Each structure stands twice: as C-alpha cells, then as structure tokens.
Image (cartoon, rainbow, N blue to C red; front, side):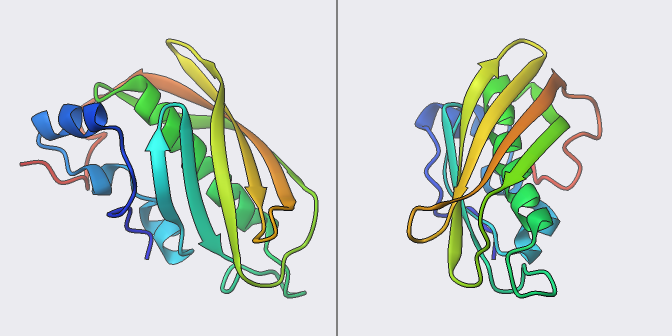
Length: 161
C-alpha cells in the first residue's frame, strides 16, 4: 500500500528526476507512515496533488477517522506539492500545519486534494481539502513548507542509479 506507481506525474517531472537517476515513486511516496496508513497518491504536480486513504485502520477509539490521520494525509500531499514546486535540487520540510475537522467518518475512503496558496523561493503553502466518498468536507488544512537546497544525505533511502 502507499506505492504511487499508478500516480500521474507531469512528464517534465519524470524526465527531470530520471536524469538524476532518482526513483520517482520512492521520492514521492507517502513514506513509511503513509504506507502503513494506506495512503495512495493518485495525481501529483506543483498545482495539484490528490491522494486517498482508507478510514479502516485509521480510526480513534470511537470508530471515527482519527484527526491525526487526516493531518498525516494533509502533510503528505502538501509536502509533495511543495517538493514538486521546488524541483529536483530542493527539498520541502513542513514547518506549520493547521487542521480543522468538520465531520466524522466511519468507513470508506477519504480523498485529499492539495492546491497552492503561495509558492515562493523559500516557502510554499498549500490548501488541503479532505472529503468523504459523498464529497462532503471532512477536514480543511493548510500546510506551509520551507523549501531549501538539497544537502548530502537528504535523499537517503531514495534509490538512485
């Protein structure tokens, strides 16, 4: 789970990272936590990142989707958008996350969509909307990432040729 092998990436992004020998699915995956939570990246570009996450396995004791799970989904997709904005020589690191939870969900999938509010040289801020299968808003989030130059060791764990 969590492998973005079916995600749609813009061709120029694929080409840019391929030229560096970077494994794009590994770089833009949901990471270890996201994989354990079942996050699937569906679409990814600097302008829009879409992912799904199952409610099952990500609930709190009352059987509702855990607010922390929504936060993980929001930070994952906002960070991917910021990383794509920065390009292959930059990394994006979340510095501020705000989530407002609007309704409980007990089953099915939730979908997160991240769109940019600001994309600058050193920061990127994304608006994230998480909805249930009936397209009802579950959570509204905002993530700001610091975008900085990649340093040796930043890509550890990401396969390169």
